[in-house]
Image (cartoon, rainbow, N blue to C red; front, side, top):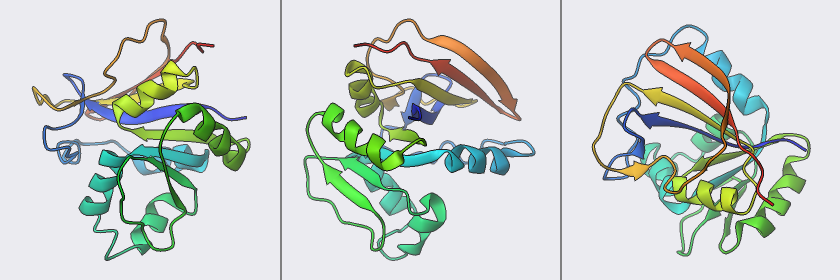
Length: 186
């Protein structure tokens, strides 16, 4: 069984999205040589993904996925994705997107079965990731800290989590990547 990982980027002041739920603040950040290969290596270990509805809607709009559904496959391949939502949302043609609601533990079991020995990527948002932590299902937080401050927006993790253990620090030009193991709560 693989890891359940929150792999994301954050501003220096702890936000993953601005007050309009946009990630546009991240794209100007310089990354060094090998950034694309590190991304591909991470994604190569992912067997399933989970997103909150706000994150899903941002990706849909930012990449114009309803008009260009082939972009989903170019970004995420054929990995199954679970979108946690209480609303009806549009589906990307040809993508294995499953809309769910309710307790993350039951869905995590389904995701784990689909992922096999590969990892589960919790794309975000922070509240959804917090729910996985609260259920004792979060193994690792990997966060790239960008040299940007927003002052407001969606927080990295809007709850208290203690006992994180730093296992890796890597500089990627202007981004610093921190990897923390999360003690399991059961």
